[in-house]
Length: 251
Image (cartoon, rainbow, N blue to C red; front, side, top):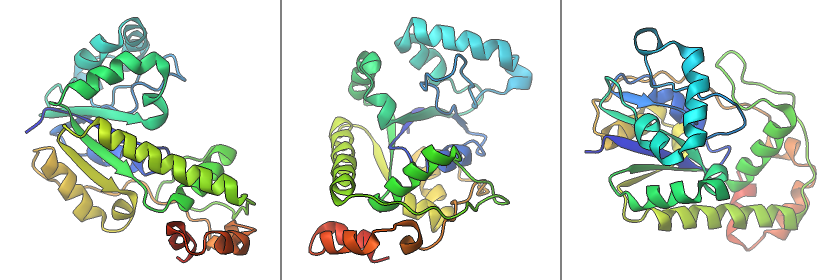
């Protein structure tokens, strides 16, 4: 049984859905994206704000502590469980690859007591389209009552598409290798989006906590059939014919 974990993933693979789901189990202190440096504060979602700390002053103080010493912040705060049994946070590939975090990543890779939830998206085309849409619209998640966006169609060159597919596969392989000695559970976005209850039971059991019924707080943003979102779908289908990537265009 572990008392600390990290969600390791690429953008647009369902990490917010997984993170918010884990926050519903009282035995898990899921602290969110604590190493995201675009803000000058850190919200520790695993903390019980009403009883343990005033939220806003601590949030800015935590950012100062993080910037002063990443390793101390990792063990003293990012893995802070409070009254829970296990604590963790989300660390995207995009942050893991930053030079500023190299020493931190080396430490995490060496500490095999840290369990890894490796979240991937099998359909790399949908991941790429989702990322393009999210960056353009600045809509990164959807609640059950707001899960639709106006359909937007893109033209993606075959080379651009293939480069992103290969990059995503290389990243997945590199982090599997990095954490090969850790207790690791690989989770597919498609399983979270499909049989959510079964997927979340598996994750909770992996973390060694008593599974509870998790409500699906977020929904997949619906954007219409693939052909309505990809102007040159026929060109790409022809280009990838006979390759392992053709399955992304046959859904």
